[in-house]
Length: 505
Image (cartoon, rainbow, N blue to C red):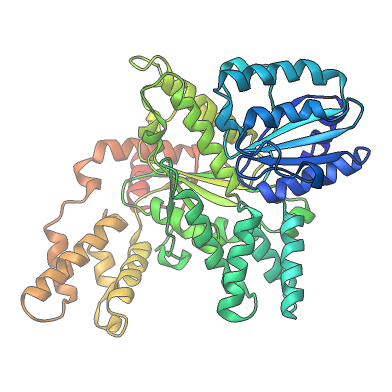
């Protein structure tokens, strides 16, 4: 049911006190006025603390700086006159005993009259003694048709015509912003270029960053990495590239559901976090990073409240990528010992949302220890796919060296023996390869010369890779993946190949 349908049903059912949390006063009041007209052309009065009532010249300014008088005004309107009274920021006065008592009296009186009081507030702040008489309904952010209509209005005003693909991408990028923010950022784009263009997606993403900087739960993470920055992982990259247009309106018309998410399990330093950033950049979606530790708070019930707030915020900014790094550590100890079951309740809320969500929030979770993940997390329906990211094979190590060296020495890449580097670094992860290159740069810099292939190999000889120091744990992880429980992100890793050969012997 849409907001208009829900709101008009409450008007017809004579719900006396309605509470709508939103920061979009102007847009909400326009929607209320339209609904009032459809319901027998009801009158609409708007009150705020500074200017009093507005909407009728005879009552202009009535109740100024007097919220109790604003409620008394409701009784001055004849009982047979259908009216909607809109009270701005009225949540600030609900703790006052006289206001609370008057509202409860009006709740009884208005059940027999075609009058409704609508309170607009930026957030839900309802005292316990009024919870039974106030009805809360949500006012959603602009839907795609509203955003598209606004974009078409602006493009018509500038005398330009956008390609349908560019229009679709701009509309999708604006989703999750209020109409006021959309108008502001589009005005900024027009002021910058004189017209709207596809590149304005970056301006829109910056506006989304502004909208979540006020929270302490999610971080807007800059995503500048590209799919091409990932060395190897061909199966995973193919899977991602096939879903590049899955958030478009064309995909909805085709019948495709929104992609749900991806779980990346594997060895540390193999590119799982890099992949999350590359996904957001390639799909032109904002990347939200969730620090699960921020969900947990000391007060009873506050952790669950923060979890719901995180979900609402992610859905408000959808379409987006929600990145949860090392989720295996976040939900350790689900037996509930020591925290009164808070971890279990937060986990239950989270996985239920993942299974039932219809919003275009693409969850990318990474994990190093598969044994620490609860079975519910691995069940089909939470994620579209689970990939195992193992150690890179020789070809992939060559690609990783090429990615880093082409970034650091783009004009001298031919001076490095990539084949030799890949051959001489078995069992090294992508993060370890990056580190030995940095160490080689220190060697060259300290001797006032450029670093060479030999410098890289020398630094590699000084590092013992994780695959050797934690061989038993990695072997268990590789065995688990080789058993066919997950999909391999790349062709077969070298260590995995050796394990399979040993198991066949």
